[in-house]
Image (cartoon, rainbow, N blue to C red):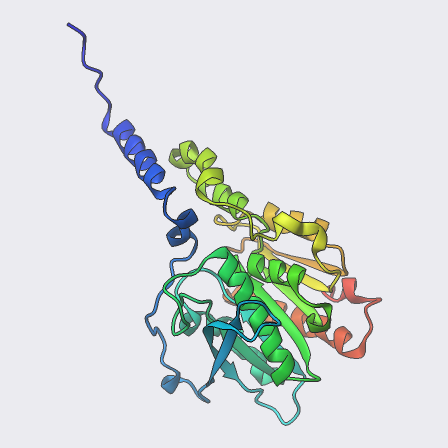
Length: 311
């Protein structure tokens, strides 16, 4: 009589997780893992002073098409000054929606910038049931087309945080050069969805067995990595926390080293994920870097751009 093989509770858990992951592979490239979107309003605009303006941005099947396939909801916070320096457009991370993410950069309005944050399709009040990699890229292209028509002659600063950094980079690779922003800011950035998944899984030893599955569960078709050679040589500031346990700092450093244009790298010692403009210990100094680097863009002086973070 053969002896029955008994698994310990620990191994049973691992087998259960692997089985669950196997089932997840059939679910639209694990969109529910990449995009845990929410329709909930976490902060109502009626509690904000001044309240933001609601915008509806149409999304077309292609940038030059007249066939609309959806729409994006956005908040526009006008500059709180007589003169407007420029427009900041924010590609937020993958959790919740704009009703929480707006707080990262609303402060720019006090320095003379208009600020727009939008939700990808599947998030908040935007159309569609769920987000996908392809949809987020089309959404970003629609946003640049919209602001080009609606905010002519303004300097544009495009900010991507976490997942939003990958979306923004891929959008820039596909964007008409006439619509390029004047400055790019990437916070806690990565270029590959697969590499980001491996980075997150590597933080816990008991998740090591799942790391090889990241390449099966998540594809990189619409990632920035898939066509990095098309990245435009725009001036950029990279922010990354050295203690980021979700997207390791090596992801941001590697992105910085490969970027083809003028670039600045700011490593916040001990900083966590997307802490550059959230953690009080970094906020003021990073604001100064933001404004210092933009002043060179405003003057058209890129010769000293790579020194703009130095005090």
